[in-house]
Length: 123
Image (cartoon, rainbow, N blue to C red; front, side):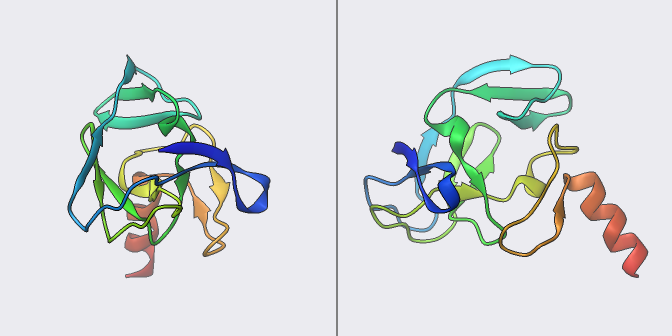
């Protein structure tokens, strides 16, 4: 993986190898924290992993190229070299430390708790 400035002048990470859907890309490493920050990934109840570079620069996407299963980063589709490595922040975070408006769908990305609330309201 390589971290670089991509579209919209944002830092992201990009594949240097080919991965098939379901391939294990890596086990994420870092320091466990009890509270989230902008660069952590929630791996359990009140467990947030401050991941090492370059993975701390993985961007959100509503149709991500990867998924996170605990500490494992797994290809969610076939990935080719040069493709950005993204994941859906709403699938791991209960509540984001830094909510934002999604560049691909225009919705507020706040975390799983807010997605569940929105679904309840719509029903």
